[in-house]
Image (tube, rainbow, N blue to C red; front, side):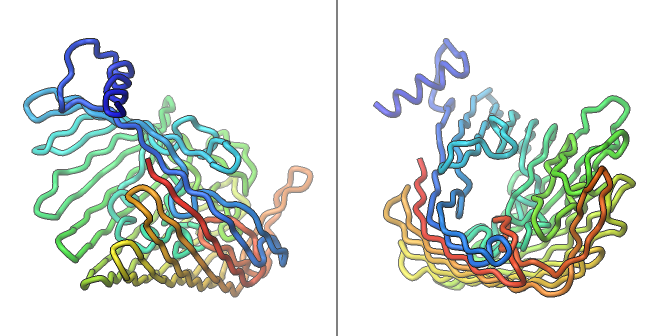
Length: 393
């Protein structure tokens, strides 16, 4: 009965009143992830205890489907909504399908072309072999300044994914500004290549976005979005840098499995370049190194740990050391319980921006610890513990 209901839904959604066959389908899917969280130094030296959502996987529901056009060619689409299970609100700036929204064509022989709001090639090809793929933000970059935790998507994007050549695959994307006479402003482009064969995984890529400054009046520190790309997550670590004129990110990662043990390491370099409307005065650079190790204790029980080091130079000159541990127990194919813990230590100074009477001033303060992309403003150190449940459908 469930399969029959989904088939009926697919016919209604696609408007295909004619005959359908096995190659045509629409799938309703989703993830609900909720837990209890404790943060020491969540805001200054204040403690926080409460609920938290999207800890290992962002809460979502979506529709994806395909239609066989013959000759090995298929039409595909995907619409994916992000939400907060604890409040019911929409995420990704209140967009209905803020996580993904695209349509395209695919063929095993030629690859896939899609158009719409999508993840960039670094997310698609590099993130999957990093510690973030298993334990999310507790082993991610402090402040997610390099989009390690997938905080950003690209609007107005055309993306090509190659066929898989014995484990080798590449991907390219271009995001348009969609503004008259501003082809080179607000654009985003990115490319990545990956090799996955047996226990070995290798990947590297580059991402660039240019924010148009002409006519812009947003104050430094505001979470302003360019036409083609979301602003990178505003956190106590990179406060004000989402208003950079351009952001360039290079990333590389490797993973290797030996029996039940998986090792991995990654490196990224992120540069935020200022424009005339920003309060900061120099290019802000973040160099990030990360490593993790996982042990599959039983088919149902996974444990792991990861370490991340971030060095910031520019208006913010600081170092961040972060350690995370995780355990995940699978009850069924769709439900699991998890426990996460993380500690971060910050040193040095960082810039923040204060607007008073329309005048924005840069203020230097002691570096604040902020674990992953959770966005809590700590003191020089921060600790976090989360226990939760995740259900997939």
